[in-house]
Image (cartoon, rainbow, N blue to C red; front, side):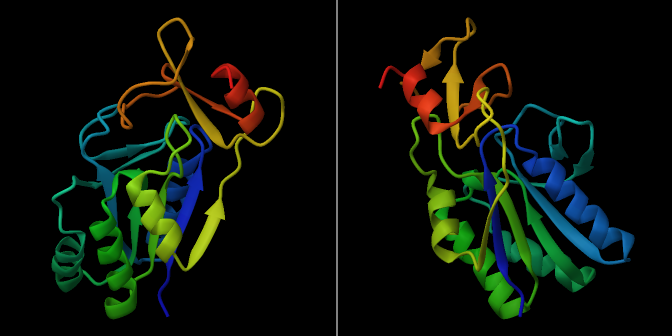
Length: 192
């Protein structure tokens, strides 16, 4: 039975690195995969999943209107897929998460989704909330706070490194915009 997996973590925990390693493992054994990444993530070349340690791979871009199920069905008809891997899964819509679940349940292809659980305010992303509800397997990828504890929160900072508590839920950025912290240091940085 194919399963829907959700691997979640704070920023800079190695989610993309883990995804690229899983993809490599499938392809090394001669199995076809399909990779997706969010179109709005413009930190790298369009249609590229890239890790901070220098690994990268081409991927199909998705936005809120992309029918992931149709994309997978079309590709699977041409080249039998063994796995679907999704980077930046927090940007999936709830409908797209439902499509991923159907890919597992009806087509029999495992789906590995990697993303953030919460935003810079500690609120769930809609895609992550649906993944937490539907995924067969939930796995936290660990990251470390500046104090050495497990980092679970994503603090958004301005150009001067000052904590931000207001703004749009989605703002693309890397180490220049976000700091992974434990809940205690996250709360302290926001003055809570």
